[in-house]
Length: 165
Image 1 (cartoon, rainbow, N blue to C red):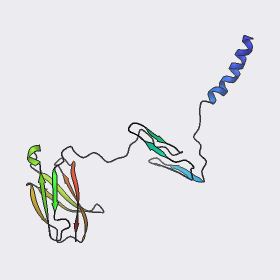
Image 2 (image 1 turned 45 degrees about the vertical axis):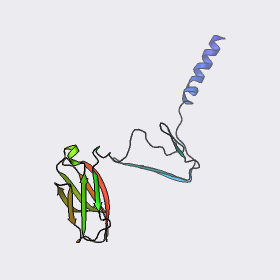
Image 3 (image 1 turned 60 degrees about the vertical axis):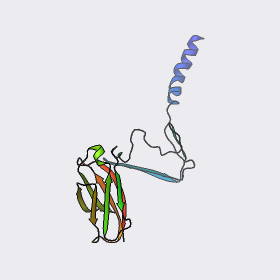
Image 4 (image 1 turned 90 degrees about the vertical axis):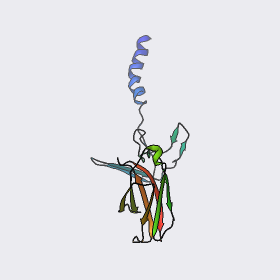
């Protein structure tokens, strides 16, 4: 009897072990996965269940396409120093006033500022030595622009938009 049980276990063990592995499968209308040496693109069209639930500590995602939990894409956090940056008048036609409060408390005497268009093209770069500057923007075209305030080491401190009309 013991020999019979051992034979059954030895024959059944590979099936039991194989049953513990499961390949990811999906029923969908279309999809593809393409990979080269530097990137991988994959998509699935027509999945019947695609829902994500997020709480403070758990993310539950249904569906075949799952995010890899070890790779995160994001925006780096801004420095803890957040000066009070005031840009006025906004919108403006000729001159733009820049007022920065809170520099003395942090021991900062010098900052740099960039004005960029919405495509990311650098329009002006200005060194700020005082807490109040007036910038002539009359030569700029009517559009929305971004002001980027950053420290001498290049870390971005604050971003603000203004409109030139």
